[in-house]
Image (cartoon, rainbow, N blue to C red; front, top):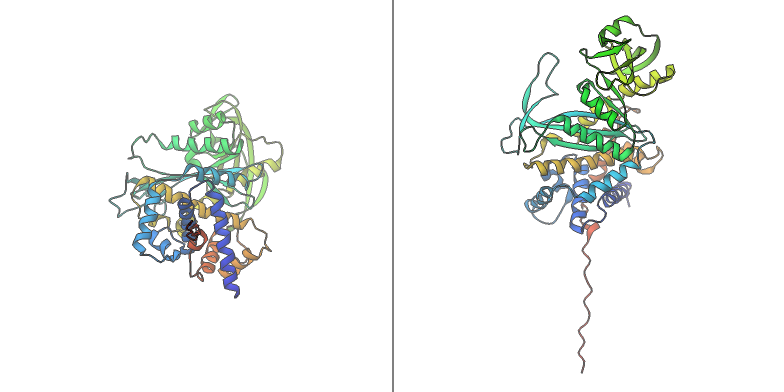
Length: 415
């Protein structure tokens, strides 16, 4: 048996075991469908159903297999599957979870028949001075960092303001926060300036969660019993705590300072952490976590600068699995497809947690043939290595789900 064949079989077995853990208590057709989608998307590096079917190598017409997968997607995501997936996530996160929440977009500029297609700001083409709007959907994502500091999504919803019963983007964000509180009891939520909203602070206080949120220049804070602009507090101080930082591909020296203030929403004591030397204007972060030393201030800044992971998560999801290239039209089917892409991303995260000496992980990295030896984000090279290993397969996962047939008994005649 050649080495490539051995790796292919081992890789298949790893995917099937992962899929079976997610699809416990489901019927055999549902379990096979989840295995087909997980294996097919990892092998094809695409969410397009025709690409997935090509990797399944089924001995029937391609059209029939596409129709079968489409029918399953229209049913939505089984509740047992979601429960099993969330249970698996809880076993992969550290005791003090860090959660990143952010919004993204899916653009379908040439789409006409997609359900509840709305208008979104295209983040990939828009700039600070000019916003470009296209037809598409909003995506609200909440990711928790696993033990290897890679993001795993526990809440991902594609939505549009034109769909029925839509309330607001805030209500969907609140639902993500409630999911996080229920799953992890207490965590630290790290969010960007778009979430500088009194309702966000009140919701996090209500759920008894920690947070690190970047403020906008319009924010006012209560300092010495006076409402003062956060930017004015920046001008009064200078960073005294030095912190080396790798930011946007370059080495920087950040200088930090902190002040105890109160926020408009809750009037509770919080800390304003100021970061100088990275951007043109100082960054303003607020947190309700206790600060007692210089190390605490540095840790708060590091938590925020770790936000790039969720942005990279969005980018990798679109690039690895061609997330914006789907063809299913119903919103329920689109969200179901999004869930199975999330499963594939979770599988990549599971591989990152394996030891560096693990034979399968070593084979994946070697097959990917990366240019750089060390990177902070491993999803790209792992997905490339998995797809390369599975390219040797001449069968999909059909043989792992053989139907069990009753043995025919010999006909006996009583005389």
